Amino acid sequence: MNTQTNAPAKDEFSIHPATLLGHVSLRVANLENQIVFYTQALGFKLHWREGNKAGLGAGGADLLRLTEEPDLKKYRRVTGLYHFAILFPDRRQLAIAVARLFAFKYRNHPTDHIMTKTTYLDDPEGNGIELYAESPEDGIFTIENNDFVTRRADGTLSDGREPLDVDALFSHLKADDKLDVPVPPETRVGHIHLHVRNVQEAVDFYHGIIGFDVMGLSSTFQAAFISAGGYHHHLGLNAWQGEGAPPPPADAVGLRHFTIDFADQEALNEVVKRIDDAGIPSNKTDDGLLVYDPSQNGVVLRTI
Image (cartoon, rainbow, N blue to C red; front, side, top):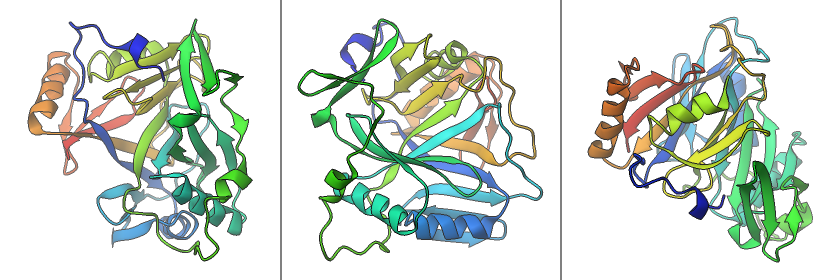
């Protein structure tokens, strides 16, 4: 996103620029099957497993936490997770991840956003996942006149959703590369994309209360991108499940919450005060302070 034209006004509160996303917590119907998928098809490490819960990632802090609950099912036309996005350190590591999916013959959709190279897939329970690497040298995407616009580095336009040149991506592989290796330790959650009941309402919460900067908002596209520190987006928000879509029922698979990691306690305290001043309910948990956005998506605030 073009960050220069969307900088917050000086009198607006802006979240600490070093704020990042932590782990994503999912409610799952079959913990064993999900662990097999995430470790074998995606290369995550199993960090721990206790009863009906497990934590996975790249060997450091958890990137994904799974909680099994009985009799869960997938619902449509509700708010919740559109996808969570795993950011790889470079195209070579993304190439290994995509080649592993190809080797498993696991359905995925390699896509060129110009500014990022990516592939999309669903896990076995229908949770959306994006795997991506940054490629800002290839161009940018931004919002102009209420529409998303993608420009290549040479100035030509793209729709931003072109098929990825997989051969070019795989050119980063070496002959002796193994595909059964875990994801590299630098891998992290790059962004979360949420279904919300109303985009402006969601922006009012994540920008107006939490303090993320608005990087682009399109009423015609019913979507917005917001971030900390000028990143193209840490959060995507869309109303593609329908204006006024309800939250998922209690027996739905999918998002429990995602975490926002603050650089220090002072930065977190600033946001907690804004939440309290706005009268938004919150609960202290082992993970951090749990709040819900207006679409009932769970958000945990904590320090790194």
